[in-house]
Length: 194
Image (cartoon, rainbow, N blue to C red; front, top):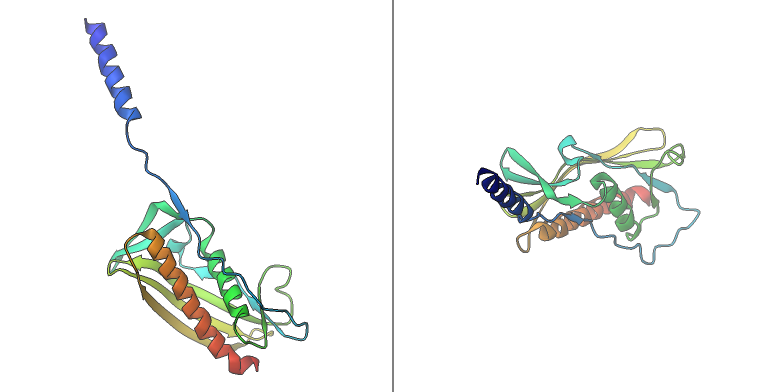
């Protein structure tokens, strides 16, 4: 009888473990807006957009969400499908290419970083949702000349309300904040690049 009870208990434990619901992991990407009709002209000076430098709490795979003024939670099951610093940099390049600039934005890398070109540096302090139902994108962007001298540097802070609850809406709103930064940078570059 004792052995029978042990088998029943072991079966119940195994059955209980096998029926535990699995949490689904979802990965997200910022939109990969195509460049559209942007055409490279070899006479255009290059603008090297360096990989974004993100705050350490943003460097993992989980999407960040601020639950209070000074507490951030990193999602375990709602993840970035690609490094967020890479996504921000790529999206900025694509969106800047659509602006009427006299420079050609391109991704910086070890091969072309030695080119004589202006460089756009992005430092990201916040790229997250918050408890008020908004997406926040904050940091600093800087433009340096080919010799490394600072041309312009500005802090930025964008807050975009979520259209509905959930991580998809958060990613969509964060995507909009990257658009906002691209617009600000393009407007600042227009007189510089003219």
